[in-house]
Figure 1 (cartoon, rainbow, N blue to C red):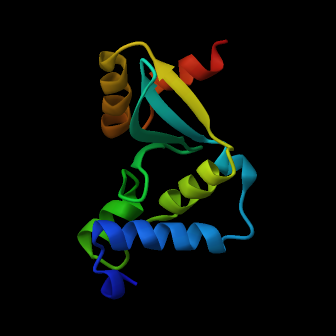
Figure 2 (cartoon, helix red, strand yellow; figure 1 turned 180 degrees about the vertical axis):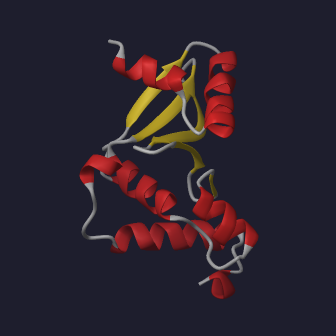
Length: 131
């Protein structure tokens, strides 16, 4: 797959969409872990996966902060995407995700910083579960 599309933006997006369309069995609970971030109702095309063992930042079809993406996609170039990118596409298509509208760009940056440095965003989790 990485050879066919050479992991170009178009090739990677196409591959993720094709995989998502082929996926017949999926874990609905896992698909509900995807959160679409917006800042003051502006969609920045940034998603967070709230995993049981860590959180990941995603840009649909292009990037995921998980170890598999870092090692096998970026490092070894074995493939063009990870399972989270495929599951995000399915979650979006089936409308199983949540959207969180953040109050400020600073809050957005804080959430991303928490995921990248701690592998967990307590800020986003508090917003979701303290209501």
